[in-house]
Length: 135
Image 1 (cartoon, one colour):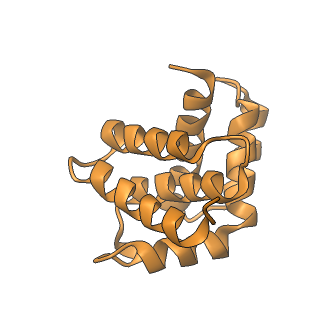
Image 2 (cartoon, rainbow, N blue to C red):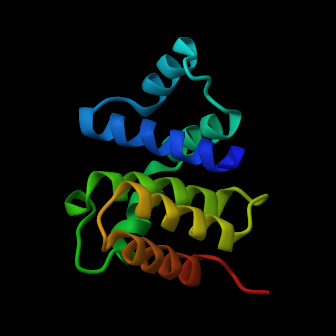
Protein backbone atom coordinates (compact mmCIF):
# COMPACT_ATOMS: atom_id res chain seq x y z
CA UNK A 1 0.00 0.00 0.00
CA UNK A 2 1.39 3.40 -0.99
CA UNK A 3 2.32 5.94 1.68
CA UNK A 4 -0.55 8.32 0.92
CA UNK A 5 -3.02 5.41 0.87
CA UNK A 6 -1.87 4.41 4.34
CA UNK A 7 -2.12 8.03 5.47
CA UNK A 8 -5.71 8.22 4.18
CA UNK A 9 -6.62 4.98 5.95
CA UNK A 10 -5.15 6.34 9.18
CA UNK A 11 -7.07 9.62 8.75
CA UNK A 12 -10.31 7.69 8.29
CA UNK A 13 -9.51 5.70 11.45
CA UNK A 14 -9.06 8.90 13.46
CA UNK A 15 -12.15 10.58 12.00
CA UNK A 16 -14.25 7.46 12.53
CA UNK A 17 -13.11 6.98 16.12
CA UNK A 18 -13.69 10.61 17.03
CA UNK A 19 -17.16 10.51 15.47
CA UNK A 20 -18.21 7.27 17.16
CA UNK A 21 -16.93 8.39 20.56
CA UNK A 22 -18.30 11.90 20.15
CA UNK A 23 -14.79 13.23 20.73
CA UNK A 24 -12.70 16.02 19.35
CA UNK A 25 -10.90 15.08 16.13
CA UNK A 26 -7.87 17.22 16.84
CA UNK A 27 -7.50 16.00 20.43
CA UNK A 28 -7.62 12.40 19.23
CA UNK A 29 -5.11 13.19 16.49
CA UNK A 30 -2.74 14.79 19.03
CA UNK A 31 -3.08 11.69 21.21
CA UNK A 32 -2.21 9.43 18.26
CA UNK A 33 0.80 11.61 17.41
CA UNK A 34 2.05 11.53 21.02
CA UNK A 35 1.59 7.78 21.24
CA UNK A 36 3.37 7.38 17.92
CA UNK A 37 2.75 3.67 17.62
CA UNK A 38 2.42 3.39 14.70
CA UNK A 39 3.75 6.80 13.67
CA UNK A 40 1.20 9.22 12.23
CA UNK A 41 2.09 10.25 8.67
CA UNK A 42 2.18 13.97 7.85
CA UNK A 43 -0.55 13.53 5.23
CA UNK A 44 -2.82 12.04 7.93
CA UNK A 45 -2.27 15.15 10.03
CA UNK A 46 -3.05 17.36 7.04
CA UNK A 47 -6.26 15.46 6.30
CA UNK A 48 -7.62 15.38 9.86
CA UNK A 49 -6.71 19.02 10.50
CA UNK A 50 -8.32 19.98 7.17
CA UNK A 51 -11.53 18.15 7.98
CA UNK A 52 -11.64 19.85 11.38
CA UNK A 53 -11.02 23.28 9.86
CA UNK A 54 -13.66 22.92 7.14
CA UNK A 55 -16.09 20.63 9.00
CA UNK A 56 -19.22 22.76 8.63
CA UNK A 57 -18.80 23.22 4.87
CA UNK A 58 -17.83 19.57 4.34
CA UNK A 59 -20.87 18.30 6.24
CA UNK A 60 -23.15 20.74 4.41
CA UNK A 61 -21.89 19.46 1.04
CA UNK A 62 -22.23 15.81 2.02
CA UNK A 63 -25.71 16.45 3.39
CA UNK A 64 -26.75 18.19 0.17
CA UNK A 65 -25.40 15.47 -2.14
CA UNK A 66 -26.00 12.30 -0.11
CA UNK A 67 -29.27 11.43 -1.80
CA UNK A 68 -31.56 9.23 0.21
CA UNK A 69 -29.59 9.64 3.44
CA UNK A 70 -29.11 12.33 6.03
CA UNK A 71 -25.55 12.89 7.22
CA UNK A 72 -26.42 11.36 10.60
CA UNK A 73 -27.89 8.21 9.02
CA UNK A 74 -24.87 7.42 6.86
CA UNK A 75 -22.78 4.52 8.12
CA UNK A 76 -20.09 5.96 10.42
CA UNK A 77 -17.20 4.74 8.30
CA UNK A 78 -18.76 6.09 5.10
CA UNK A 79 -19.18 9.47 6.78
CA UNK A 80 -15.49 9.45 7.77
CA UNK A 81 -14.40 8.47 4.25
CA UNK A 82 -16.58 11.13 2.66
CA UNK A 83 -15.37 13.85 5.01
CA UNK A 84 -11.75 13.06 4.31
CA UNK A 85 -12.31 12.83 0.55
CA UNK A 86 -14.33 16.05 0.33
CA UNK A 87 -11.54 17.91 2.12
CA UNK A 88 -8.98 16.45 -0.24
CA UNK A 89 -11.10 17.18 -3.34
CA UNK A 90 -11.75 20.81 -2.49
CA UNK A 91 -8.72 21.95 -0.51
CA UNK A 92 -5.76 19.71 -1.43
CA UNK A 93 -4.68 20.95 -4.84
CA UNK A 94 -1.71 18.60 -5.06
CA UNK A 95 -3.86 15.48 -5.43
CA UNK A 96 -5.77 14.79 -8.68
CA UNK A 97 -9.53 14.53 -8.19
CA UNK A 98 -9.67 11.09 -9.82
CA UNK A 99 -7.08 9.79 -7.33
CA UNK A 100 -9.05 11.15 -4.37
CA UNK A 101 -12.24 9.47 -5.56
CA UNK A 102 -10.50 6.18 -6.41
CA UNK A 103 -8.83 6.08 -2.99
CA UNK A 104 -12.12 6.81 -1.21
CA UNK A 105 -13.88 4.06 -3.16
CA UNK A 106 -11.10 1.61 -2.32
CA UNK A 107 -11.39 2.49 1.37
CA UNK A 108 -15.15 1.93 1.19
CA UNK A 109 -14.56 -1.48 -0.45
CA UNK A 110 -12.20 -2.45 2.34
CA UNK A 111 -13.93 -0.93 5.35
CA UNK A 112 -17.65 -0.73 4.67
CA UNK A 113 -20.68 -2.42 3.13
CA UNK A 114 -21.03 -3.85 -0.37
CA UNK A 115 -23.14 -0.84 -1.40
CA UNK A 116 -20.76 1.76 0.03
CA UNK A 117 -18.20 2.00 -2.81
CA UNK A 118 -20.83 2.96 -5.38
CA UNK A 119 -22.53 5.33 -2.95
CA UNK A 120 -19.26 7.04 -1.98
CA UNK A 121 -18.37 7.35 -5.67
CA UNK A 122 -21.76 8.90 -6.47
CA UNK A 123 -21.67 11.42 -3.62
CA UNK A 124 -18.11 12.51 -4.39
CA UNK A 125 -18.87 12.74 -8.11
CA UNK A 126 -21.88 14.94 -7.41
CA UNK A 127 -19.85 17.21 -5.12
CA UNK A 128 -17.06 17.40 -7.68
CA UNK A 129 -19.54 18.31 -10.46
CA UNK A 130 -21.21 20.97 -8.32
CA UNK A 131 -18.20 22.53 -6.59
CA UNK A 132 -15.12 22.24 -8.81
CA UNK A 133 -15.04 24.49 -11.87
CA UNK A 134 -14.03 22.82 -15.10
CA UNK A 135 -11.30 24.26 -17.27
